[in-house]
Length: 512
Image 1: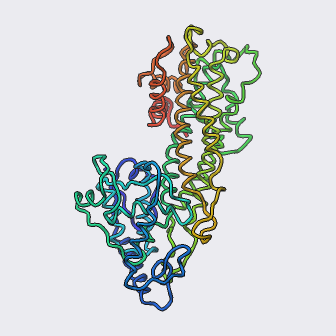
Image 2 (image 1 turned 120 degrees about the vertical axis):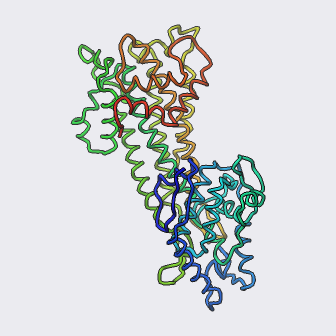
Image 3 (image 1 turned 30 degrees about the horizontal axis):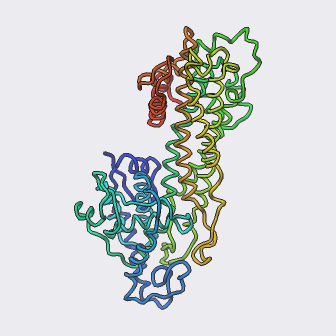
């Protein structure tokens, strides 16, 4: 198993994915321990200072002007975590919680927050023991960080609340920590505040979404190519010099993938001449422009995530010269905007895929394919309802494309009077990506049937590899109606897990 080391700088997106999804171990480097110890000493020096320091000797939010007596400051930090662990709703996915914990430890390791090294080490101990705090769906407005979700994580460090242990059982946190030999934390000055004041939940979801979209946008190029073949479309519109007249980088990448996947296709060659059609429909001809625009949106979001992975996110911050200053770096607007932009992109990639699927099923537009891709329409309905299911998910993604980040609600007695809603933007992005995965799985299944129905014409090497991977996974070719949901779920699985992209790349080389 790989190991990720927190050195007090940043982490790579691949590190986040490895810890969140693959259970990679995490260690705290010695230089990070030193940086944390130095910042903890600065905070300790403020305890008896005559001037109050936010979160060290005062309350929080609109209670920032309430000075807390010295003998109650440990109680202050513990009470903060308990009161802020106020989430409701379904438990958040394990991978999201693990990403959030890693990223909070990453910020603490930078030595700009004030906690002792043992705080980060305890977070890492839970990660390495596969102990995952139960975090509830609702509670973050993405302004003073992901307060409620991070508070649920912090509560587990105290041995309170609920966790899911390595066996998958939900148990009291104290019981799981005791079984793993992990000592619960006793919080000192500012440590409770530092554990909950970050964009780590929404950022973790953004990083995971980017990893998913790197795969899905390649799948979208694959399913587009399959639909082009099945619909007897042309590849001439994807020519490098033609696409290059509009120098959008994502468009060029998608068009290059389509040329690679369709290269040498006998189906495409079969109607290159003496075809009375002047041009294909937009859903074929403009596919690189839509998927390419999504790629460009991904690159913007990747830049936002990359900067955030290098950032110290907390309030107040401990600066190298010893100052402790309030700031607004915890505001999630950059991440929230990026998640909203990606939800729009995911919605449009799914929408154009559904239009290609509908065209495959309609005998008035499919250029010779049977109605709904069944040889016996009437008795058999073929993929009629598969397209309904696809259309329902396209409609949901259009609703999810409405931005969360413009929907601020003031909180904390108007102290926190503008919030980012970044957590909400990230949550709906996850749903949009799940839907896009299934939408592309439906197109994959229908286009593979369409290609088979063009026999004896053969597909190109790339599209044949995708079709063959679908068949090898257990989705049979054209025939009488059968229970369709298992086939579509299989297609969803092999789209999601990278099987389709891997099969195509084995056949034709790396896709961009």
